[in-house]
Image 1 (cartoon, rainbow, N blue to C red):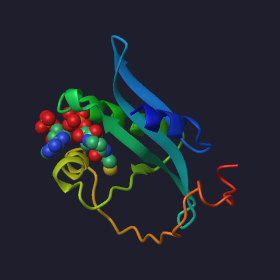
Image 2: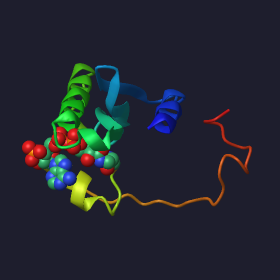
Image 3: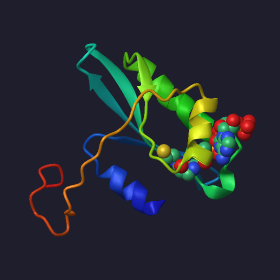
Image 4: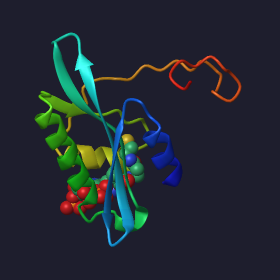
Length: 126
Ligand SMILES: CC(C)(COP(=O)(O)OP(=O)(O)OC[C@H]1O[C@@H](n2cnc3c(N)ncnc32)[C@H](O)[C@@H]1OP(=O)(O)O)[C@@H](O)C(=O)NCCC(=O)NCCS
């Protein structure tokens, strides 16, 4: 979880929120605004959500998603969305569906075969 905190806290796009109790981190939420050019509208994107293993199924994830939806509403968004890959059906996809999210499409990905460590050209990381 520390690695994710560091990565997102260095992001130029995401805001990171931490849910904690008694100095213990229970969960993280990454949030960003996405412009929707087709409709000239904005969505809030949940760019990261993770709940500590020992704190799952106690409502922390729902709390973080409710918070993301409030952030989105407050910033004039018409909804929220997120990307979730195959292989997370049992856990995350049940969670999103329970919260009213619908699957509306596919994500098409093409990997370039380099990482920032072996390739110095990366305008977003300079
Ligand atoms: C997915 C995740 C964020 C859910 O967080 P959580 O705090 O456990 O979720 P909540 O307790 O708020 O669950 C709300 C509802 O979602 C559904 N749900 C949550 N986890 C579920 C699971 N493993 N299986 C089935 N339904 C689930 C339930 O309907 C649940 O309500 P209930 O407990 O009253 O039945 C958490 O499991 C997690 O961090 N997983 C690993 C990281 C991850 O997969 N992130 C998403 C990447 S796309």
